[in-house]
Length: 156
Image 1: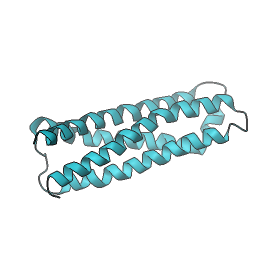
Image 2 (image 1 turned 30 degrees about the vertical axis):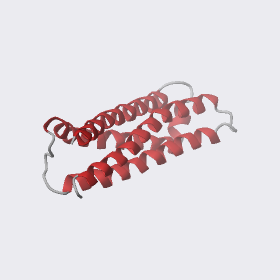
Image 3 (image 1 turned 90 degrees about the vertical axis):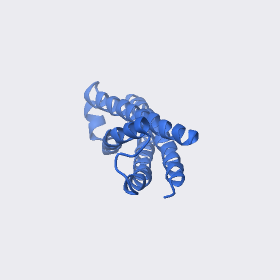
Image 4 (image 1 turned 90 degrees about the horizontal axis):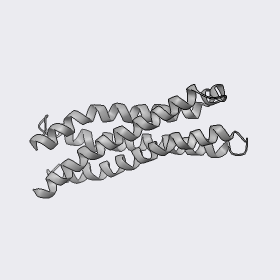
């Protein structure tokens, strides 16, 4: 049972980290879109809008999951009994992880492609905004493993 408690607390910590990384990425993207001489160029690049949507999706999902994870870590039981919540965690964590991964790939890919066009400021801001999203994806990927282990430990 001690390892199950450790997994539950790790899940809570990773959910908080995912929220923080996605929020940092969102803030960096918004700042990049609002300032500088490349304001119109950064806004017109639709790929960065997808990165923005991925960060916002990660934040929204983390905010939805956080109260349930906190209750689970404190009380050591689920708020909603049965198979629904473990299955929801298992599948939705995977979907959000892939959504974040596609946002990271698009952010880094577009920034790399602009290297040839010589928009140095856009490239640097694109890389900087995508880096915290990469960290958010990594924490979410680890979460998918832990929710899978937690689900198996409970016999689902």
